[in-house]
Amino acid sequence: MANFYPEQYLKTGIYPINHNYLPDQFSDLEQIWEKVREVVKRGDFTLGEAVDSFERDFARLNDGEFGIGVGSGTDALFLSLKALGVGEGDEVITTPYTFYATVGAIVTAGATPVFVDAGEDYNIDANLIERAITPKTKAIMPVHWSGNPCDMDAINTIAKQYGIHVVADACHAIGATYHSKGMAQLSDLTCFSMHPLKNLNVWGDGGVIVTNNASLADKLYSIRNHGLVDRDTCREFAYNSRLDTIQAVVAQHLLDKKIPNITRSRIANAKALDKGLQGINGVTLPPRSEHKHAVYHIYMAIFERRDALQAHLQKAGIDAKVHYPLPMHLQPAAKAYGYVRGDFPVTEHISDNCLSLPVHEFITSEEVAYMIEQVRQFYQGA
Ligand SMILES: *Cc1c(COP(=O)(O)O)cnc(C)c1O
Image 1 (tube, protein in one colour):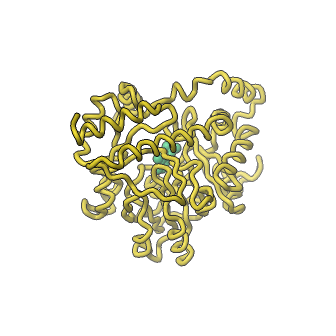
Image 2 (cartoon, protein in one colour):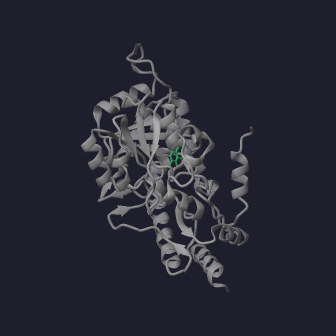
Image 3 (tube, protein in one colour):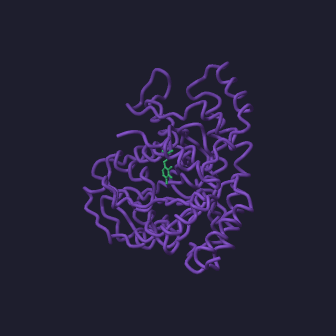
């Protein structure tokens, strides 16, 4: 088996309107180099000043008290489960409509994933959670898909009633709010990714856990760093998954200079796409809620004759993508859990019919109008 990522980057780069904008994102590279130089001069290559200040500022942005920088979004999810003592024999409820890492974190933590179907907003359907709870259920892992918050009031009510934890996969949802509360206010532990394709994107892998729970934070600061409480004292044997200090410098730069504009532009582009697409027969937009401030990591909708539309848009130079064609319960990796097609009809409908359009901050209003016009032409003809 070969690495496939570089090829994927090349493929997406051939479309004039694409999802890949990394060279533009870092056109102010020189400013970041200056700050990297300071790290090299100080020599604090692991943790250190840059990580401390970034963790503090990132937590604040998401309405939380403590930020714990870790190696990736996946590690954020995995370490969160470990910090809660989730392991062998436990069940964690999540959605089959997500990225592999959500389920991977549950499985590698030693627990069994228990899937609950998505709703029409593509997030876990809170109405279906209660019947999936068993005496083994230790946690619920909702995914704020595309940057749109889940129905956290309902989820937290259930969690409280049954005494189970909530670990949120907020990898798409940096800066999102729900009833004006930041993501960290809505679960025991909230996990973010800074992968190059996420809204706040560093030069490799990075993740952050945000929490308001001081004892969980204490545990996480330690277990991401060998279980150390100081240089010579190991409280428990644990992991090495620290946010890389150079990546913290990159992330701090984006946090200070760019994230407000990134978020604002994505929302503006999404609103313009909504406006243009909502009247077109063949397109079904997800419901939008006033009390949810979504940040549109992905802009997606359900489209009739999806595959033909995708081909039409690609021919028109638009990198229309499917996030993702095969849900988790139908993946080869899930075979042992015994799920079959038909188990999660809403999820399967989304996977079979969804398409995502580029929505990032370098998409211009002309490009938005062009995308809408291409979709209109597909359904209504020239
Ligand atoms: C990207 C992503 C992750 C994992 O993040 P990494 O930083 O790539 O490990 C987890 N969950 C979701 C929903 C994601 O999109």
